[in-house]
Length: 248
Image (cartoon, rainbow, N blue to C red; front, side, top):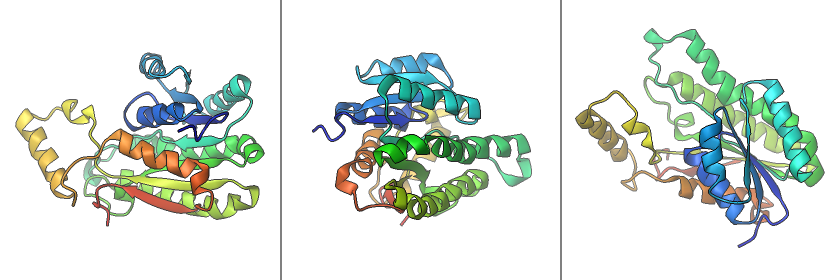
């Protein structure tokens, strides 16, 4: 399937996890894909998975980095058809222990970075009547204890998606989001929890999912590819859940 032949996609936070899977899926379907992230080593490794993936070391929280990224996209490919706002952080931050620097960083990446990247990408997207896919979370619909700041940041993404979908329709730009639930990643091996504690947490999260399992990045990537493609040409200002039913 070559749904994205002769098209260019930008995937922020594309070096690992969901972003990496999205980049690989779009490249496999013919797109020239540019991924961004703050560290070159994982970006270089992620780009090596497909010849049509290249990278730019950039922080979405820095306006000058966003501008440089879009300049690179235009210089390399001369167009932008798909923007996937995937970069994000997900802190566990109980209110009593909240450090306001942590709050600032979460909203800088999850909200400000998404807004600024989209704003600066508009001229390129307007030229191609492109598509924007924002990566949200099931906590936007069902906030979790000790994750109020992250939940609020993703609720903002939901509001932005719906508003932009209506606002940018006049320019032929579609805007949708994917609500992501529990996804299998190495994160549980990177915590300070004991093996027993980590397993207990995984079991508790899995119990919240009606389908009884974690998802994987490829399942999210499949939905992103659909929303970015012409098959979804009459879909905008909408949210699609890939969460095993956990946010229902």
